[in-house]
Image (cartoon, rainbow, N blue to C red; front, side):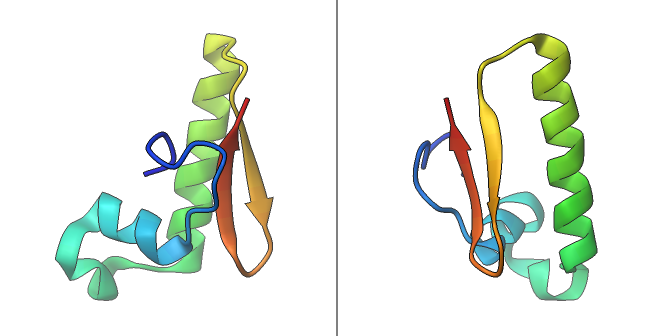
Length: 65
């Protein structure tokens, strides 16, 4: 979702649905999303990519170059 919407805002619900599918309501939590994106940030940094994940408080996330 983040790569598809590169430069645009992706909501927590959109991200949760892409990770967990339709059963996201049972599995979704803010902590789980934050932890997943934290791991993604670390992987992007380790690969030396120029992508940056930006957090927009109470709105969502954006992948930017």
